[in-house]
Image (cartoon, rainbow, N blue to C red):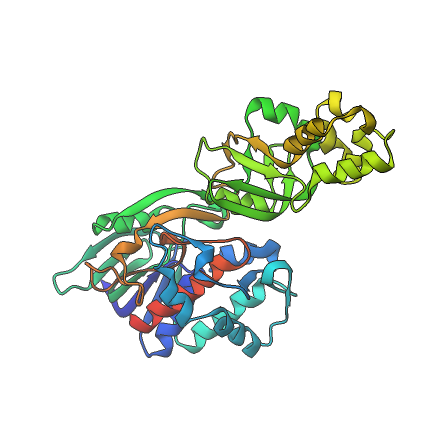
Length: 394
């Protein structure tokens, strides 16, 4: 026997909870299904447990998609200021970190509790540990969803299943499978906001740098990000690397500038005038960690007194530190990725309602769509915005 309701939402993550509370506020009967034991597991893990819930600088240009215009409508209709207003309404304290990132000063649990309270107030029902077995379209255009915990029929089915990143938080390919079942294309998938691994030769050469973090600019093709990079025992991480990874394609080289915004040749010339007997490595060690200098600058240059080096050799040092070209071996994959790049093709979805153009009543929201934000609260804002839009339409 199937329970009949207005809206079934598959996925109790950020976008699913936002959609549920908004649909419930409109008087819709809403059931949220999730295969996990608790809702919002990824919310709880975000921001190191403090939930980087949005960013003051949200802009459509900070999102990656085959259809770069798709995210504009949702982000303009439910903005970061709207979500901040909701956080303020629930008296949740937060702090701004670098680049406009907003974090709870307490715990991510506060954001999840806020969403839970709003869902409860709106009369939303939850069925957890509900593995989806089958989904079918009935002759009257309703949907029938069969789970191990029972069956449901509904007029509006919302897919809020997320991507493949963070498998320990319950990631699964279910959303993509549902899209394909109904003839909706899925753009190629890959891990995003993820550390790079190194080629064996580079890994050996850089093994001694594990734990070093420096401000740097990293780039590939036309994409460039300036922030910390972190050397790890597996490869490269840190905010700048994570940002770049979403734009990087396997086999592409990346360029690292360890001293951005500095004319290193002029700096070395000045030191040559003032301290001609100082070794190049001594000057460079005032700018970068000694271990990093030793790993990047050839000893034949690093060990020389500045007075013995030509301006051409200064340029060689600058290239080694500021135009370091490296070809990553790959990424650490979905295990450590924060997002999935690619997903349900936005060309097949209404940017206003999140409804599939050719399947009335079927909606896709959040990370399952081919929309990937920058690091720093952008992806959660996409979840809130896309979920809100679908919540007005289901």
